[in-house]
Image: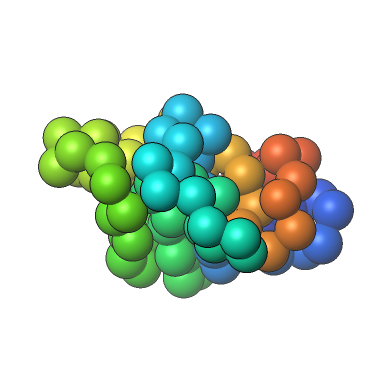
Length: 79
């Protein structure tokens, strides 16, 4: 699954395609945050996006998750 080249995070990523509709200080970077475990999406946190977007992101995570939730970097690789 994805890995942040800046901090090494391999578990939590947001999507710049789906900006957070209710931004808070120190809140999530995206309306959809994916939690990854090994080679699969473990679960998604939906914070204001449509069910269709969530389903598409679950089916094709490499198209959606491009922002590290730990450090905010967009320098992400997908093996």
